[in-house]
Image (cartoon, rainbow, N blue to C red; front, side, top):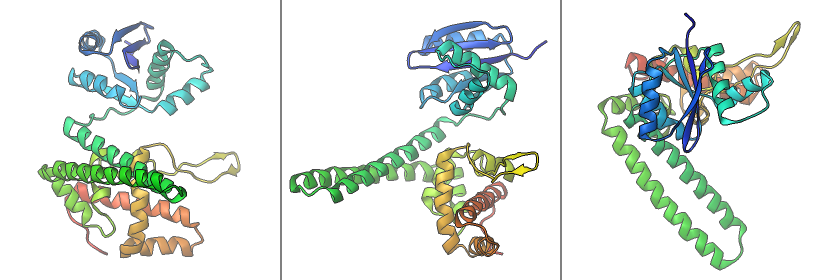
Amino acid sequence: MDAVYVGIDVSKDRLDVHVRPSGQAFAVARDGEGLADLAERLGGLGAAIVALEATGGFEMVAAGALAAAGLPVVVVNPAQVRAFAQALGKRAKTDPIDAAVIAHFVEATKPEIRPLPDEQTQLLADLIARRRQIIQMIVAERQRERRTTVARLKRSIQRLAAALERELSEVDQDIDDSVRGSPAWRQNEDLMQSVPGVGPIIARSLLAELPELGTLDRRQIAALAGLAPWTRQSGKWKGKSFIGGGRSAVRTVLFMGALAAARYNPTLKAFRQRLIDAGKPKMVAAIAVARKLLTILNAIVRDQKPWQSA
């Protein structure tokens, strides 16, 4: 019997569903009644994978409801799905077509099923994301303040920036309450902060956005963060290696952490210097430090042992 794969395209008001290899297609409302009906219909199919495309948060309620019903749910990268569609020559884009492409994509790639973040982890991830948004708004307002010469506009910008600073302080307090209120998170945060150069922002971002930390090997965790290098090669021609994909927010925070660790962590500072002395560009060295930092943090959380300098 052929394995069954389900693709679901998520929009604001409805879910378009496509089942492979039968070709069955239908749609349900994206509400409680529709999700209950969908879970019941899919439960009888014995699906190997039920896949939803990441759509800015709309998919999380549906993914959570289906996972709670015991279905093997994955959330797939929309850029990868779109590239797959282009490779198949499918230029048309409608919700039913997208659902069919998602089902075909997971049938071809068979992504690994991983547990979805629980409600507490999702809340922490939302708080971390909100913190990033507020910081971006503060930076934008400060840039406007530097450019304007009108006193009235300057005062307006300063009032808004001050309000954003207060909001940032409240979000930071909410994040602190969430992390320090969980014994497991508090322990892992303290373990990660034992590494010189790693502060609370990096530790809490990884707790929220990389809950697999400590459960995967170094290659898998690097790939999940988008820090695993991939090569371009054809015949005798070999291009440069690149990084990409994965979770961009995790990659960004690790890169910033690597810049600090390369200054304050003796082991990573020496590692970076060896790469520079070997002729590696500074950006390549920084990426390598970020990858090594992630490997160290992964091992520390896995073994539940704090940093020990070599």
